[in-house]
Structure formats: structure tokens, C-alpha cells
Length: 288
Length: 333
Image (tube, rainbow over all chains, first blue to last red; front, side):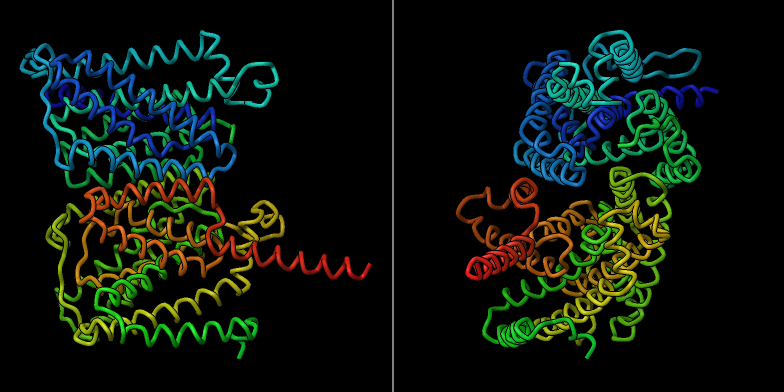
């Protein structure tokens, strides 16, 4: 029983982290039809900037905020100067984001070195609770809460506000939104940067969970986020939330019961979903 | 000969001169140049295999290194576990062909279900990463992240001799792939690239043809992997990484996608630049960071030169022809 609770919490925390990456990726894909291959790199930058600020100021909150702001700016830069030039040309988008990914991942190695940097959890989140014989890591609960808040926040933003309305309309007919006199390009930049900021937040929260950050973490998490987006359905926000949860829980279970299969499990799941529902579990009818 | 039927006289002479030069050069060059050129030849084949996919079917495969790395590992593992003789080399080639066509079949079955270029790119990236991860964990066979050094058959040991084998390998593969592109199957692939919907309406089962394209590309890539492993006498998980796929992608981009020969031009250009920059590292340590230049080249090519060198050259030739024709036309008036 206690193993079950531990696995549940581990899985949910893992799922929350994956969700932070996958949701941004999914919204960008839905709105602009761009697969952002720089997402793993943005995640990495978030992690490294957090570690950098955290070791300087010893403030967890400042570190996280700094990571979000800088990665937001980085995302806006990518969109304005590179991605916006190749809208409508899918192969070029894939190629250009891949090129940026290579450059900025190597810049991380140039600035911070290729060896992993260790980082501690902040003192007020480092402890554990013991409830009925089950040890609960506080930091994981914190991750679950953050993930939930962000998911609710995005959901509210998308369904209740004017900005969300424009974004949802843009997912369906960007040209029509433009024709109504709304500056859709500004929204493109904002959404791209916001998705980047989510990835940055993910990176910042990931580093203390694992206890260290290295330059290979970006690609690894990007692959997980891609799998989630494929499983959940391209461009579907609910799909990416459900997919993240599912992948996180499955990852925790497989890591406990059959660690040697951990690598293969995700892809098998993806292949199975694609075999029965090629559009993903919550796939939108809109195809770009 | 049927093979030479659609090559005009000028091109034929040019290729002949090029071959003579290429067979004389190694006798005058340094050992490092010979190795570099062998590398260019082998990576050109690898990039050509990529061009079959991207250039002729428009399918972006981000897990293509899976075949390349597997080829290198199959060679390496067999040479270590059995013996380093010619017989084992032939065995390695046969196993690579079987393995790669199987892997391509499975990959195709997963990827080619619905979904467009985007889904395919994401799924193949995931598949490639899984293969790399598996190789890293399977330490008893692949030696994990340390890499697998191995002995090679004596016949390949001489660098100069191997240069010729690599050249012959390039020539044979170029001819085979060219024949494939010119075959009816290759024509269907091109039709799919131009307009998949129309090809479907004409009654072609497009995913079946794409699967064939993927298998041909996979086998070619695997064979170049075997050769690359022999060149380096070493295989590591980098050969399976996304970076290795991006290498092929950059080479085809620089050379020109959908041209086949572009891969050879691109391979020569990218590898020479890489070699030159690495030589500069004594000037400033920044030159050691090849990936920065690699990425920058990538972005520049995508933004400003999407046709690549061969594409630009073809365009230039076409422009000249139109100009000449219009001049003749004006004179006639």
C-alpha cells in the first residue's frame, strides 16, 4: 500500500514536470503549426539560469522568476528573428528550430561546462513528511501543486479571457482572426514566448528534483514532451495534460517494477496509441 | 550501356576527369587528408541515403542515425565477438542489410500511419533517442558510453587502400541509388513529394512506396555505418544520436536536397570546413566548439540558401539557358 502511494506521488510529480513542457509545446503547435524543437534547449536554459541565480543569491523564488523571465525573452527572440520568417513552411520550421537547438545547447556547454552541476533543494522544501509509514517528499508535493495551479491557470486563461478567445480562434482560423483586426502576429510571439517560459519553469523546477543538471537533460525531456503531444493529440491542451499524467504515472510504475524496460515503455505506449488512434487520444480534427 | 544513356558527353568527360584526379590525389597527399577524404566519401553515402527520404519523399526522419549507428555497431560487435576476417565483414554486411530493412519496416509502420511531416519528425526523434538509450544501457555488448573499439580485417588496415575501398563504395552506391531514383518506384516517390494527394488519386498506395523509400534509405545508411565504423575502428553511442542525423541533414541541405549529387558536394564542404575550423583551435579555443558553427551554418542555409549548392548551380544553368534562348529569339525578331 505504501509503495502504491509513493509511486502515485512520484508519478504525479513527474507528470507535472512533463506537463509544463508539453503544454507549451502543444499550444504552440496548435496555434502556429510549429513544432518547436528548441523546447528542450529552453528547458535547459531555464534549469541552468535557475541554478546560476540560486547559487548566487540563495533564493529559490528569485531563481525561478529569473529563469522564467530570461527564457521568456529567449523565446520571443527565437520567434521574432527566426521562426516568424518561415511560417507556412513546415520543413523549414523544423530545420531552423533544430539549428537553434544545436547552437543554444552548445552555448550552455560553453558557459557552464559539460559536467553536471549539483544543486540542493531550498531548505523549506527539502524535508519529508511521514504519514502512516509512508514517506512523502515535500518537493514532489510542491511540484504537483505547481503543476495543478498552472494547468488550472492555463485552462482559465484559454476558456474565460479575451486573450484565450483569440488564441482558440487562432488555432482554428488564423487568417480570419487577422481579418477581424486583431494583431495575430503579436499573439504568435506572445504564445511562443509563454510556451518557452513554461519550459523554462519546468527546467528550473527539474534541477532541484534530480539534484543536478547537465546538458543532456534538455533532449531527454523534449523527447518525453514529444511523446506526450503525440499521445495526447497534436495541439490539444487537455490531451497534453492527460498524456503527461499518464506518462508520469507509467514512468514511476515501470521504474519500480521493471527498471530495465523504462526506455522502451514510453515508445511502446506511443506506438500502441498510434496504432489504434493515429490522431492521438484527444486529437483535434484540425490538421495543419 | 543503359546506365550511361541519360548522361550527356560533357558530364561523362567531367566525371572521368574527376575520377582520375581522385585516384591520383592520395599518392600526393598527407595521411590526414586521405582519412578526411575517406570520411567525406562515406558520409556522402550516408547523406545520400538521407536525401532519398527527405529530398524524394519529403519525409523528415530525425531517427535516421539509428541505421547508421547500428551498422557501425553490428560491424564492431561481430569483429570483436567472432573474428576480424573478410568472411565476418561479409556477414556483417548481410546482417546490417537484414537488420536495417526490418528496423525501417517497423519504423515505417509506426510513423507512416496518418500524421504529416510534423508527427513523423517528432516520432522518429523519439525512436532514435530510444535506440541510443538502449545502446547506452546494454553495456555487456556495446560497452555503453565508453564506446566500442575493435579490430578490423587486415585488408582494410592500410589507410591508402581503404581510401580506394571508400571511393569504390561511394561510386557503387551512387549508381545504385541513381538507378533507384530513375526506376518506376523512384518516379512514384517523386510524385508523392510533389503532390501526395494526387498520387493517391492516381491509385498509388503512397504509404507502401514511402515504406520502400525508407527501407532503401535505411539499408544504405546502415552500410555506410559499417564502413564508417571500419574507418574509425571504433563505434560509440554518438553515432546513434540526433546529432548524427543532423549531420546528414546539414550535408544534404548545404549540397541541395533532392539532387542526390548534392550530398557528395555537401559532404565535401561540411567535412572540409569542420576540419579547417578544428585546425584553428590553437588560434582561439572558440574554434573547438564545432557545434556552434554547425548550428549557425544550419540556420543560415535554411534562411538564405534553401536550394543548396547544387540547387543554386542548376538555377544558374537554367537562367543562362533562358537568357540565351531569349537572345536568339530577339535576334530573330
